[in-house]
Image 1 (cartoon, rainbow, N blue to C red):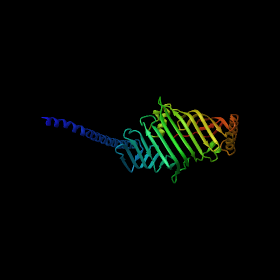
Image 2 (tube, rainbow, N blue to C red):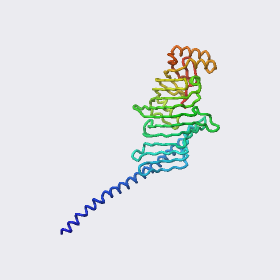
Image 3 (cartoon, rainbow, N blue to C red):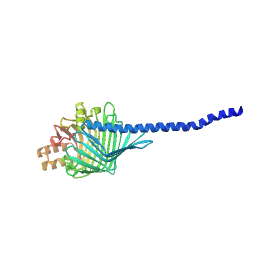
Image 4 (cartoon, rainbow, N blue to C red):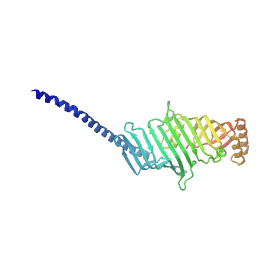
Length: 343
């Protein structure tokens, strides 16, 4: 009887010994099944995005794709990736590698080790090289998604037969978008030590010096910025009453510094900016005088604008208002060039 009781007591001990291993095996099987489901879902969404782009008149294609990273990541590796929207804008990546942790499958980090090329509807293709080119994307359902882009050591080379891009090189580029309350979106752009052959007022002052740009703005009706292509999205946003509130816009090029801290801008029917920016501008009278002598703007308008700017100068800086109206950019009474075109 004692032996029987002793044997009966030993069985639970064996179950206690094997139980953790059985639980670990069950967890491993469930985790593997979950990873395989996430892999299949990633492939399904890629196929869905391609079908959506093609259905809208654009294109999305790749030469090869692979989803790896088991057990803790999703690694998506694409070669010869090409995206084109209906308006003609496009991107091409020789290689794009993206990854997301399994516990946060909507937060992606991507790198383009071989750079990229982008296509303009009218200007042609531009190849972009970089020492570092990476981005992170999350919150895809937000307006806008949470996007951060970092590029170091940039070069821009127009393809044979394409028109030159307005920037040749840049030391750094940072771009961030964030969603805010009350259907607002925020965008921040920083371009450091760029080589850009500026024209117009800033070009006259810059004299070929390096360009640094900082732009910080909030825009309304963020959810309305949506459409089959960029032009359609901006038109929909503008029709909904969207406006861009500039918190800071600083453009430094050589001796020239344009520093705007306030202004509200919209987009008119032909895709050009409309509104006004209150700013300070360094060396404005000199630039206006040069532009008047060279016939870039009418001598009378240049003289009148120079008098206005001179009266508002404090040392090398002058308080100015840049107006974007009827497709033109004006400084005081002088039209100094076309208004910037958004699409």
